[in-house]
Image 1: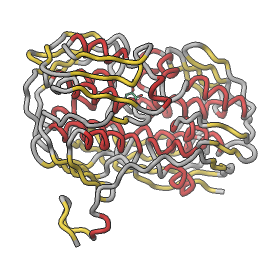
Image 2: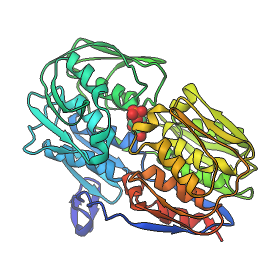
Image 3: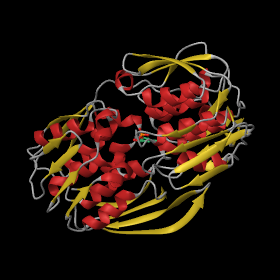
Image 4: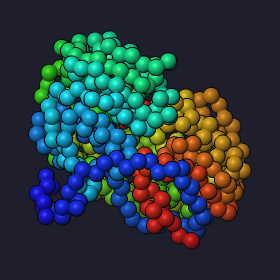
Amino acid sequence: MQACPFGTVPSATCSAILKEPMPDKKSVVIRPAKGFTGSMSLPGDKSISHRYAMLGAIAEGLTKLENFSTGADCASTLECLKTLGVKWERIGDAVAIYGHGPKLKAPDAPLDCGNSGSTIRMLSGILAGQKFTSELTGDDSLRRRPMARIIEPLEMMGAKTTAADGGRAPLSISGGRLKAIDYKLSVASAQVKTSLLFAGLYADGTTRVAEPIQTRDHGEHALEAFGAQLERRMKDVSVAGGQKLHAIEATIPGDFSSAAFFLCAAGLFPESQLTISGLLLNPTRTRLLDFLIGLGLRITPTDLREQHGELVGMVQVQGGVLKGARVVGEDTAALIDEIPVLAAIAPYTSEGIEIRDARELRVKESDRIASVATNLRAMGAKVEEFEDGLRIPGGQKLHGAKLDSFGDHRIAMAFAVAALRAEGNTEITGADAAVISYPEFFNALEGLVQR
Ligand code: S3P
């Protein structure tokens, strides 16, 4: 037995678990199901896990996080923090982070952010405030994604950066003392908002970030939980520089974006009964519940409580007959991570689903508009593709097919759900991409389907 930050545990489990290498492209075969029923809880929310890990690293004291995300993206954040001199331990689903305080150690190697846009963009805010140069890079997908959205404001605050062509990773950031800015985001992005608020902690004066559309506010809740004071209005948040953060102990609520796959799977079968407990229900994340209710599901939230500013509870879902929906404007922004799975179940609705104003989907882990359209067509569906979205008629019958995840975790999981109502088996190549946010996904899905 060995003493650990979480008490005394068998020594075999009390060691830092290193990021697992991504397995080779693996396929899964999904067989059609007759129903979908059961109870579950989910590993900790990815957005919150990243933020708590980063703030725990620059806080004073020992932060203990139960139900930390099991995904490879959050492991990338932890590995980058280690390269920056932060000590942490992973014990089962918990992580203990020994706060290093605001000044991190100069890294002796490039920071590998893997597939994680959240890691590279949010960590950049903290690195902009460090008196050293860091290099950040990632996998092929991450190196294709736009970084100008953080480079521009961080440079305005005084950081010096270099980037590959088109403002892409690898990035280098030479930081130091920053000056506060008053910045209006041109893209609605919670990653950028959070990055600038983190940088604001290192700035002289008060940094203000205004967003065109309200995005998820986990950065704001996390900063407040770690002891920072913010001034918040709906689409406008300010943070004064020089504030000290203290450690926290928290249980991270279940990931709502992972729950989305199960909520939509329940929607495919009129007799479904699904209960998800300990789920994140922050209203900036749960627009999918409104849509699914509008489509015809009965969803009851109960056992509501607040944990470090985040709303958490249980949802009970009863299947129904899915009608149709149009997703535009602020709804598209609020549903951005859930659109692949919503689109994947669209052919099974009676009236179809149209999604517009979703250009951002083209610069996610894959071009999600193209990935969804390609896979739906492979399953025999009619789909209209637009530069900013998709129109998918309802009342369609899909057949099993050989699909590709396009290396994108949410595409792999979305089409595992679509496959449950198809005729015949569906093979998804590169299904191991699910490890990015939810390594246990296929087992959890299999545990709830009825055949
Ligand atoms: C996230 C914000 C969103 C989302 C991503 C996680 C976050 O990205 O798509 O999965 O944790 O802040 P953008 O900020 O690029 O919109």
